[in-house]
Length: 499
Image (cartoon, rainbow, N blue to C red; front, side, top):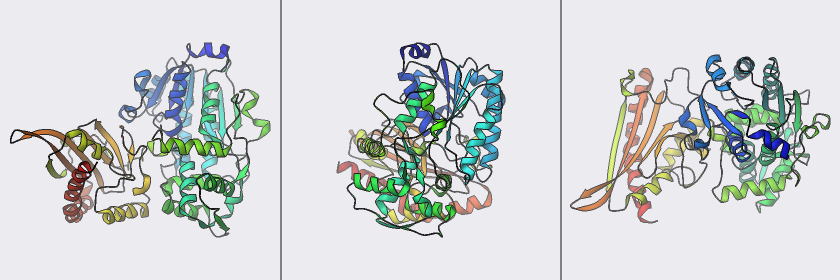
């Protein structure tokens, strides 16, 4: 950032929407590093309470569909980043996105915002997917107001934890020989998350507002098949055999990806849809015309992959695609509704007392899910995850951001961390397909038994059913609880003894 533009940073208040998401969470840290005043707009503060930057930002609780709360969040803001997506909202996500963008544009105009910066996707092919068309339409809706809108259109984003990277990684690792659709031959221009953040943070420091759509892409143009071969080489894998067949439509491809990778079908569908057209930055619309690329140059794909893999190995993944919550069903109440809200609550309470220090027990509780698994009854967990995927859920393979430590808002397979008190309490909310709402809690307490200090691990499964179907579901799974939950407690204690 130039000295002149750097001087502007301290005088500007920047709003970041989507701060609980993959790009937004990283952009906040980048802006703080460059001395901007940052406000984040979120629907629920608790979802970002575990972020390292939470004490350095203003937090405004608002919903982009609500005009007044959005206007309040934009009050006093110079530049607003629009990083909201609704691709998991069902078949009408394009209508939802358009309405949100119109509302945001009007609220920004009323709040006298000087600049809106929107991160979209490159869409320069006649055969455009529904997802990319929706992203382009969002840009048009934002620009329908009087506030200048700088639309930054990116190619496939490669970085630790990005959905595109996870899809590439798992397809390459798990399928040494694969029959693939024709779109693997389409040209694309991937860009490293580091370079995306460079462009976005420098856009916030532009001296004057800018209107228009500009493309950003990495230094290489290559096919998706080339990307898989590059990943295989860097991972020490043999060259992948790729057999292209014409019958795999984007819809079938997304189902296939949902089975092979942690990325659920609902998210894979728009990602695959984006690949049916060539995603290449247009030199005539390059953002380099107004923002110079990094002095050391844009990262090639191989370097971006190596950086992503090193972050994963070092457990330094800052944000992940799964950070964005799965939308609740229309009938669902707030996750934190109390007992007196009129719900029926079923509970399964179990506990075990162990002759170990609480911190040893807690370390194994905090490591639950992901590569560690669920401490026994593996086939039953696997079948439940498979059933969830079959009905369009996230499934069990979503994994974790960090294999050892959790923060509020993290995904843990088909659960999400709702409450966390380090060393003592963990509460997970179920994001699997259910006829109701479910939680799984763990509490670790130090107790005295015959004058000796021990640890008591309490596990509570809670279910709030929706109607008769929900109640039938609870009683149908009760027999499985007899196998799953006592085994889980014993194996957590066993694992703690062995580490």
